[in-house]
Length: 255
Image (cartoon, rainbow, N blue to C red; front, side, top):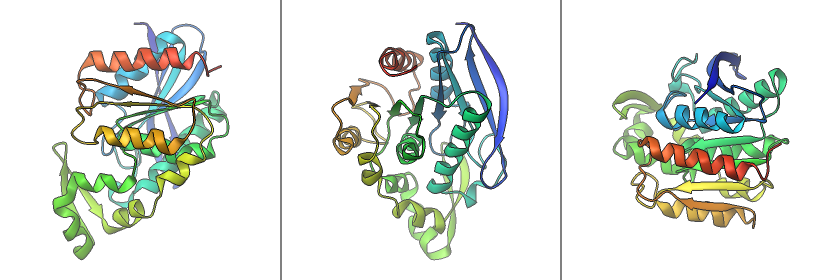
């Protein structure tokens, strides 16, 4: 696999510098895309790096970045919420549009998939959306720290352990995720969507993918079952399969 990686960064709306990588094809760029990582992950999570690099073989350049307070990006994660991740994604879109070319495609993994669906309406030049293991409702993320929700509500915050790392979750995070109706945002998306989901997903059940497809209400949308895959796409072959399908699907829609 031949590709080039550029280390780039951009400012979000709060003035924080967000760290990013731009994976570029060895030859001409046919299209640009953004990969949005999962909740509390980083741009270097296996699914993000593997899929981004694999897509360069089809001439698609992919920007992957760390949300505020995660990875190598500036800011305090405890002060972020779902709305700030949507804002960070919009900043990434603006960065690509001003420095390279507006992305045709956005790809979101897990809660990053919900972020993509929530933000798409403010990205007029999009031609396609891909989600992987995405929930159909934002409050679903509370299940990751359900044993701490009562403490967060009563004390205003709590320390939670996610994927072996400790984070502070504040009540403002709960208030924010509970205020967002994803169905309304999905119904307004006009570009085609490609939903990937594993029937064996134990974090976000397959029913969420079926509901996302139903809420989108567009005959050009597709749902692809990732039989046997984990929520995080830990197996390299699963990421490679997703990449091949995205590239083939994208031929129909991307410039």
